[in-house]
Structures are given as C-alpha cells and as structure tokens.
Amino acid sequence: MTSIAALARGGEAMALGVNDAFPCAMFVHAKSPEDIEPHHLLQQRTVVLVDSVVNSGKKVANFVQHVCSLHATIRIVVLAGVVQAQSVSEGSLAQTLAHHANFSLVALCLSDNRFTGRGTTDTGNRLFNTTHLP
Image: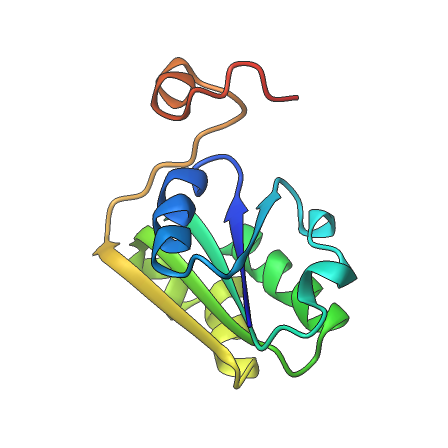
C-alpha cells in the first residue's frame, strides 16, 4: 500500500494527479513533517512526498528524516516538478540521498536557477489559491 503526501503548499496539485494514478493510496496534506503521523504509514510499503519545487532540499530532508523515524523500512519517493541542481549535489538533500537506501527522487525538471520565496506571495497565492491557509 502507498501513502501520498502533498507538501504544502505547492505539492497539492501534482499530488492530486498522482492520487488519480493510484486511487487506492492514502492521501495526506502535510504542511510540516509532524503532519505525517504514524497511522498514515501503518501497513504502508511506500510513501510518496510530492512538492512542486525543491530549492535547497532542507524541507524534503526534514520530511524524509521524520518518515524514517516513524517507519524505518518504508520506501520513500520524492516527486517534484523542479529540483534545483545544487540541492542534489551538495547540502541536506544530497546527504539524505546518500544515507537512505530506500529513498528515491523523481524530478520533472532539474534547474540551475534558484529562487527562494519567503512566506506568502501574491504569485503563490494566485497559483495555489492558498490565501486562506493558516
């Protein structure tokens, strides 16, 4: 069995598409790693963490570490629309890739460009319709 976790706020649209392909999977919204609770991984073999953009990889690495602390043997697949190239060559995401045998990263695009948003932005609110999220 599989759990699909939409990492807020950008991962929901893609995660819903993944859920269409795996309709029997459990769907979880996760703003922080702690939003993934033990019962979300109970009797699961794979968790798919979905985010639209991975910049530094720190957020994804925190999610992977949290999931591993709850279920040490679960297969973790991170699916992202865009991954910043430096995040997979150095830093916390590169270390996570190197240290977890059951961890895979799937990116639709690898980019040398880097943009780190802070908080909510007008563009982000329009893209993800998240003006009312806490």
